[in-house]
Each structure stands twice: as structure tokens, then as C-alpha cells.
Amino acid sequence: MRLQARGLLAQSELAGAGITDPQLCASYRACRRLNAAHGRTYFLATRLLPEGKRPYVHALYGFARYADEIVDDLGSGLTPAEKTLRLDAWAGRFLAGRTDDPVLPAVLDTIRRWDIPLEHFQAFLASMRMDLTVREYATWDDLMTYVYGSGAVIGLQMLPILEPSHDAAAPYARDLGTAFQLANFLRDVGEDLRRDRVYLPQESLALFGVDREVLAGGVVDGRVRRLLAFEIARCRELFRAAAPGVRLLHPTSRPCIQTALRLYAAILDEIEKADYQVLDRRVRVGTARRLRVALPAYIRATRAGNAAVSQ
View 1 (cartoon, rainbow, N blue to C red):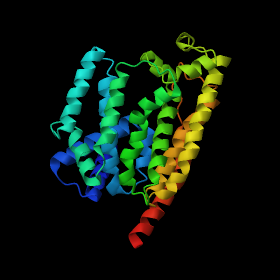
View 2: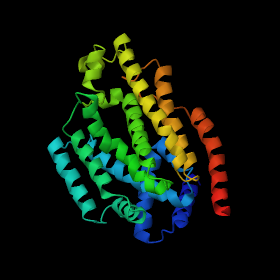
View 3: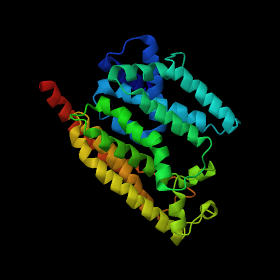
């Protein structure tokens, strides 16, 4: 029954978007499944958009997740060089407009419908290639080169679908995409380390007397707490900088982005509540808090949708 309900909801979203071609429908459904399975917070926020916009957001998530799985497929036994070839082959099919792939038809359709610049996807793929060879970043600026492609451009890809009222929304979208990515880094320090990656600047580690060996030891001592507190404060500054941009979006888009902002920022709160224990576990925002944030937003989204229809 639950699967049937999900199928009906997915079909309703596709109908709302005017998507009827069978191949496109199958691709959009594949992207939706990736979003629902791997991006719980992102997926929940997407539910606050009008039905007709949700498939396009699922497609963007599907693109990012599909590339990420190529890079982080730990069970494949492939070397970084072999993964690079695999990623480049998939990227080549994407750039050539090939549709013989589970997610690419939906992604290419989304790009065409919303006139999303291809350069944002090229920047994302460049950062994915960095993940196959770069294990750490010396400075904040070095990290931001990676984060531009892995985080900031996600906000820029989304922006046309959110229908901003002014071009001034773009810097806010970049800041929010960056903040989302940094919150993920802080939550996943231990998990990333087990993949032999450190997404905290080496200059920050050195500032607090921390190195890779200290992190690998799994003990959150005073040095590690001070390091994480420092980076959390920096991430919160980005969330605060991005928040005014929500007002520049279409009224029906605001509840989605405001909810996503609050839920991702809540990751930082949960890290603090857990006494910064992120080396041996993945801190999560609990269901109760997610619902406290999402339910009022759902009411606002419904009102905004009704208001838009009546205009």
C-alpha cells in the first residue's frame, strides 16, 4: 500500500509538471527514488514545492547522487584512475546529450526546460574528479575551490526552478549551497576520514593542534572540540548571510528553501548537543524536530500555492 501511494504521488508530480513521455517519466521516477533514499532532508524540503516543480529538483539531485556513487563506490574494487575513466565516460554521455542512462533523460530535460547553464554541471563534475585524487585541502580558499563545484553550484542549478524575482538572488544561492555542503562535512568528519578524505582546511587543524592522526584516533578531546566549534561558527555565518535571499524567491518556493535552511542548520545544533562526537558516528536531526520544522512550513506552502493560483 505504501509503495502504491508513493507511485501515485510520483505520477501526480509528473502530471503536474506536464511530463508524459514514457522514457522521461521513468527517468524522473529513478531520480525521485535516489532523492528519497539518500537525501532525506533534501527530499522532505522538496515536498514543500508545488507538485509541478518537484520532478525537476529530483532530477538535479539524481544527477549529483549518480556521479557521487561513481566516485564513492567502495565495493567496486576500482582504482581512482579507473573511477576517473568511468566518471569521464558518464560525463561525456551527459555532455553529448545521450539518453541511454537511468537519470540523464530527466536531467537533460530539466536543463532545457529551465535554461540552466551547463557550466554549473561542468563545475560539479570537476569537483567530483577532485574527490578521486585530492585527500585534503591546505587552506580555506583551496577548500572553497572544491566547494564551489560540489555545493555552491547546486544552489545555482536550483535557482531557475525557484523563480527568483531578481538576479540579486544568485549570491545568496551560492552561499546557501556552500553552507549546506559545509554542514555535511562537519557531520561526516569520521565517515569522510574512513574514505581517506579530510574536508576541514589543514590550516584550521594546525591552528588547534590537530592533525589527521588525531582525527583517526577517534577521540574528541579539547583540541578537536575547539576545531569543530570554530568551523561550526564559520558555517553559521554562511547560513545567516544566505537567509535574506529567501525573500527574493517566488512565494511558492520560499517554504521549501526556508525549511531546508533550518534543517541543515539544525545539523550544527545536533553536533553541539552530541558534544562534537562526529568521529565515530553520524549525527542526525531527529524525526520530531524535522516535523516541527516541516509541518508549519507545509501550511505556509499550501497557503502560498493557493494565493498564487488565485492571482
